[in-house]
Length: 205
Image (cartoon, rainbow, N blue to C red):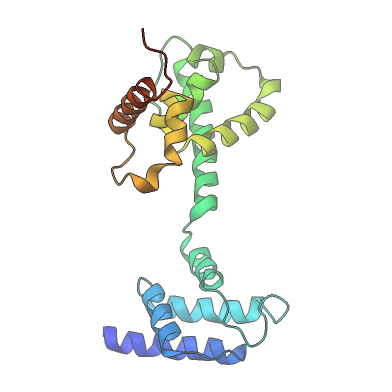
């Protein structure tokens, strides 16, 4: 079954390359089959046909294979999947809706269970009571602020909660294979402070 599916997918990839006059090497074909592995043959067929219909030579240079991202967008369009920035934006919008609903249901006297990123953004906005005091006329620009703050904070909650020095460590992560959890960030911050204290020329008391 898998072998038959791969043969049909390989034929679709060859057809796609032929439509744009692209040379298809064995390595590129293998890569495409790896990328198409999670999808069914019919989904792949529809996606390839959609790319050919939607993207002419003004979007895909003749003689070049279309980027897989174009096919993946068509696959995602059919399945409803969201990836990357689209997924992050949708999460932020969903949390905005949940925040408004929670504020209406709970009121300022009871803080509901919030998504960790939402909880951090709420603290940045001044706390739950402040959020519950927003006026209807403010919601349009509060919405924009919330979505921007949520997208910036997502996945970085621990570092943001620990301050600028912890956020700076995110840029140094390639040399440190340990995940930058709150505990590891605290250890790294303590180590950094110790190194700074013992640096040449540092004041000692």
